[in-house]
Image (cartoon, rainbow, N blue to C red):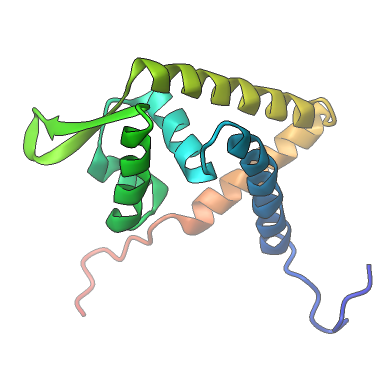
Length: 154
């Protein structure tokens, strides 16, 4: 491949990961739009299928969204009858997100789409390819782990 500046080629790991993230988002987004959901809405339903009910603060932390953005997403899902947002009985200062029966059904369809997509990827890979992928993901996790600064004074 020819790059505009041969002295500045794409980054070895981050450029392909960025491209893959965009391609996956586009691919899954096209399928989510068929169900009347945005990619973020579908992702939230899928997450709550596995981890719900869940305090809204935990969702903010996992998704890395601003609270105002998550509020808009949850408002739309509540309006669609897919999600409830009630005061958290364990901490009355927060809200608990939980799928409705319709939300569970939608999340099951989303999960089936994700499983089919993953299988289409896996069908093209060897065990060695998968191990290499796991190794890269482990290296990323290690490289992004918080740095322990000990008892250093500022």
